[in-house]
Image 1 (tube, rainbow, N blue to C red):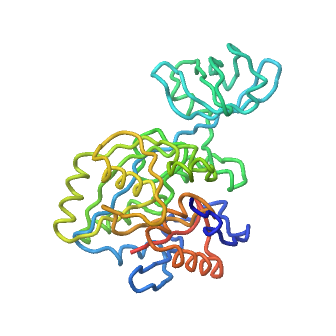
Image 2 (cartoon, rainbow, N blue to C red):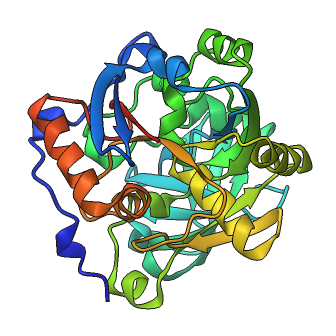
Image 3 (cartoon, helix red, strand yellow):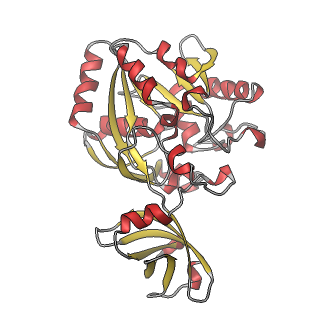
Length: 338
């Protein structure tokens, strides 16, 4: 079994980013060279200087929905409903419901003007099936829902988070967490990258609530993670083959892209669900380089980047990031591993 205690590091609480820097591409960027074992310190917009003609940049175009709904029972008790997955097109959702014990089936939670949630069925682990009631449900979700910021940010979501916690290329709704490595790109930076002969393509992986959960004994024993829906367009598959054929690099923007591409490499399915758990040692078949944020201690994401760059080298880089006061986690700084 994996010894998760080996993937730990000391992080002062003040280095956890509560807000992103603005503009997006002005955050710090650590450059890791796996062969030379060197570390450089730059600004994110400098990433263009490390990309070459014939490289392929792969982005996750998932879009975060404002999944956190706050409402009240008739008694006035506050209830929080966290939308997880739509079950149909008629308003039925799988959701996490805080204080679920206070609700009975058919109870309604009043969220906003003409917008309610009815409890249909209780499930294990605080999950439930709810039915959203009202006209133009999607508009109501966006009007009354809050962006589900990660718990370690330790503040309430603000209206501006609906834009800040979203990549500029987000298109396909379905995530409850952002693919945070992509948050650093601006439209202008992407255009500059294209002008350098770098191709850009997309995959979709709807990041789920499981991304925030600590690793469990079951994860470690079964070597599997939570399941997340992914989709890879034919165009992206073709560009990967073309890039490899020309000797270019496939550069994954974020661990979600890594999981998507390496799942495809294993099962050859362009659409489905991934529960791939990447940990050392791992034979990467598609991804050549990785842009990523700094991840939580003892997390599946830290294991993934350790599999890619080597545990000792990654932990050395993290110690240096702490010493140089990099900003950590979702709204924090970035790393380019080449």
